[in-house]
Length: 220
Image (tube, rainbow, N blue to C red; front, side, top):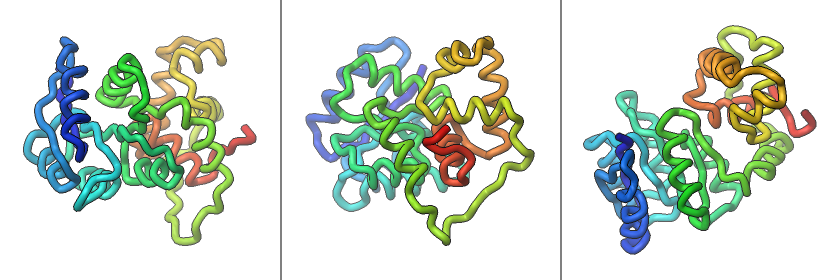
């Protein structure tokens, strides 16, 4: 059972999401928060598998709340940002704060449910309407001099670099397997190695790491 909490300042949005999620046999809504402070407290007290986090909320916004949640050493919750805003600064802020996924509220139910399940199993997700633009921007934005570069603990292999580049295009494990003519289990094996070496929590954060450290670019 995937336990989910919903953080949004609009009661009608929380109620709507709850209705959708509670219809699923493998998903249970265990709490709601109307602002970032309540979201942080809920994560600490209830330990949901996933928090669906809005960005613009009173008091403590969703990005700051995500950063607070992910900085807690005892945290076991993954954050899926669900918002009406697709501004680059919000997307980058959410990903850099440690969110495992970013989804626009206009997404259909199937996409929402699939994203929650993906985040819950540690795969991460990024709305396909944002992927190309986000990847391009990550590749082209000037790296700040104060950003700490974090080389992998062990150099990535040629195959791992190849898979990381395909991940950065927004491809799924199945699509990567088809592109490289290998089995999905092989993709998962190499992905596990990428996560271990880079210290990333999931595939999405591995992509963030790759662009932050200049390992892949939009030219690949």
